[in-house]
Length: 258
Image 1 (cartoon, one colour):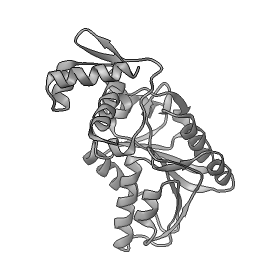
Image 2 (cartoon, one colour):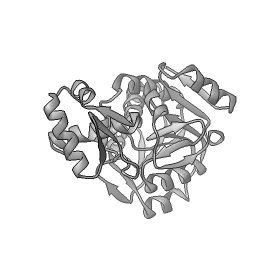
Image 3 (cartoon, one colour):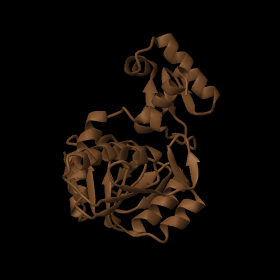
Image 4 (cartoon, rainbow, N blue to C red):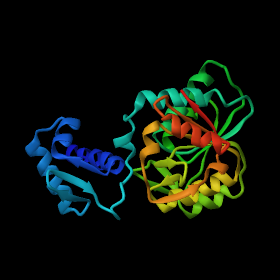
């Protein structure tokens, strides 16, 4: 992904959250001139990814945000590290856990590796569909990769083979991320393969723990697949609104802000 593609992906990711952006907002948020912001907007409109408006761009219904691990990995990085560090404390000796792919779960793999190096844990078995998680943890504990079709932008495996393997496995916890989440529609993803995989993963786990930074509570995505009563715990950051906290707690979800 070159610099132009990465910039466009970041703008689309922000537009996916806010619904609209002005040229001035694009220029300010992405440190470009206003003429450059106009050129980027025109390019995105020509690719049918946005709607041009007077003075800006709007989200184009049907042009779903395209996930990119490389684009998102450093966004909200401090929040993701805090969330991951807390989540790592929930794993105990002899646990069998699944770490999904995704940028926040990537940080969980790093935090878990640190605990293992310090000998705070023993005999942990990790299943994952992420090569990144494998590389972080494989020298420190037993790691089993769920294979299948490799998706470069998500840096994970998914599809029929992955789903077939999951059907024969069981986990104490699965740790998953989300492209979006809210009290009414639950956990959401921007592609059907992720939805199918995570639905099965949740069914094969005793408890599902969702790791999401607070910005994800403002998002919308393509497919909703896990309601509040299927989630044991949500770990997010301290910026989550009080109304969101109260809403989930009324539904019986253990929500923790770190």
